[in-house]
Image 1 (cartoon, rainbow, N blue to C red):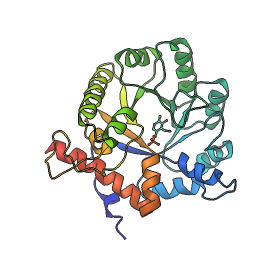
Image 2: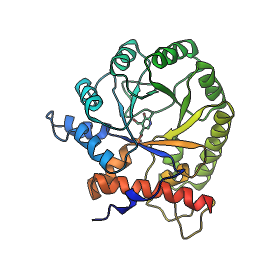
Image 3: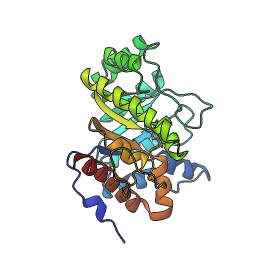
Length: 276
Ligand code: PXP
């Protein structure tokens, strides 16, 4: 067994929020109680997860209301409750009082959260939600694309944090499209700089994975290929990463504790290589 990477120092490295939705997806495929996403959350914390992230969707396709209650009762690290900006969800969050909330867009037909929130168009509604959730004691983050107008709107909405959507970068990486990776990385860096200049704490997530490719990333030696997770973790403004699908996928092959160790090692390595 090799869990040692979980014990590497993570000083200065982004915190890792582990999204457990896909454990619930697997459970729900058979309609029973196994595998239990709450048990997975507890194991993830043992393995080094800094935050447990989950998305209570309107259609309850993975996480369900009773999971939220059990997570709140049993998880010792901060919970990051992802939810759409609806009255129902705001009410559940106010009753649950998670440490963190990430407001996301939601469309019933989508397979996953496909884009960021349109804060520009929904500014008044999102500003109300931010102040309601802040009053309930939750730190709010808005899940948006790395688009200057959205970042500025997020600051106007009063959110202390933004989570920038890395789906396009991650897809470009999987496709081996180096030009698109560079373009997305440049967009992300500019977005992070702008968000920081506006006083926002910056997170990132969606689609991030470990490397199955051998091409070297910008700033890295040719012998040190880096994953989409590492590429984003290396950016100094990133305070938190939220990762689900690829981490739970990796766990199918190596177990959840080792998957945690593998992702944490990649995050730490990315920071170390860049800071050399
Ligand atoms: N961050 C947010 C706001 C999300 O909605 C999701 C997906 O639920 C993630 C991160 C994690 O994405 P993935 O499962 O692709 O790692």
